[in-house]
Length: 558
Ligand SMILES: [Zn+2]
Ligand SMILES: [Zn+2]
Image (cartoon, rainbow, N blue to C red; front, side, top):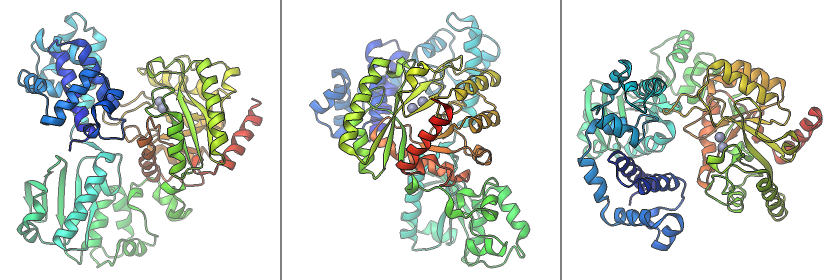
């Protein structure tokens, strides 16, 4: 059975190819919209019947889905793929290059691969074509450079499950206990380049076991390693070691280089036999350090002042903060969404749909907000003691102002502020814009600080220290946006925020019930930066949250 993301990717590619080849513009658009919506559905589209599909999509999209269901592919897609040079597909992944722009680049300038495009931009040839100014040319150069430095890398969330499954499978097939992930995947880095596995078996024995290596396509091999990619195209390395050296090798192959070197300096004998990783840390005079912390960043605080048990975990999170419903661009109704949060055992949920300036995302006018609050009051009566807190994700305008008046902002229990438009700013402008918004007394939480999307765009540059200082001064909480494509703020900023006494909220930025679980990826990243339960705002129970919000209101005189 095809997954929703596989079907969506076919529709998206078809839509792009239709635009590229000048096919029906309207159908191309509706396919791209459908592909986007599909990513948010919890049911599998290939299992939905015609009338269920027609509730979600228009007729032409439904017939495409049915064709995929029956044939596993789309005839038109196959035809257009045949007509398209292979270099164009890579160009389609460049941010900001839609089908129409690509069509001009390809058909008018005869450019059909990324390298030729980069060369044309650098030689200022592209800006000679009408519709492509100097600015567009610069942006394309930046996007290609971003793309090149990111290719071959993956979001941790897209690799984590497969990596765990591989280890479980190998454990069973090879009948060995001492096998583990190591490297970046074991450290749960935001972005990973490959899956690394360490095991106590010889390479010869491994290769002799046919069922073990049928999951791997091997590309190169050394005495103690096999390298290649999995059947799902993820690069891997398997390291082979002896029973005696297993824990030592696991330690060396897990931590960042700086972490490992610092510990090594204090180890009495490097080649000694260790009974476990804890044994290694103990011999270095330290308590055990979790793999995700081994970055030479926050771990030393935990070996001196704090216990690693005080680190935030998934189960500490009491409330789901920063969520969108059908009131703006979310997929689920407010009722369904909050019902799901309650069912998952949370104590409260913060509904923060888009604000009126974000009209592309269905941002709410003042009248709509008044209606939404009436609905929240109704639902709250039924769900008590569970509670919905009224919020908004208010756009930070280019001036640094928020997009509602102060007297209107008073209506919310809390206000999340984010930048969504006009993202191209230099550091000074971006920092000034954020600082002004942080100083607004109604601002409670700073949402996705840099607007980055990992492996897609780097986000606007900001002076993070100045922003954290301002949050400390103004009692503003900083969000870790837990969407695995954002993870913004970056975990490396957490130690500074904690030093300044700024609390962090781990927010899913959910646009559907399925995305509530994004909290997990935020927690993973937060742990890497050493975030404690105590300093996690939404690890506090409802009573404390309300008391904190009231106290803040009194202090601010609002
Ligand atoms: Zn946002
Ligand atoms: Zn949001």
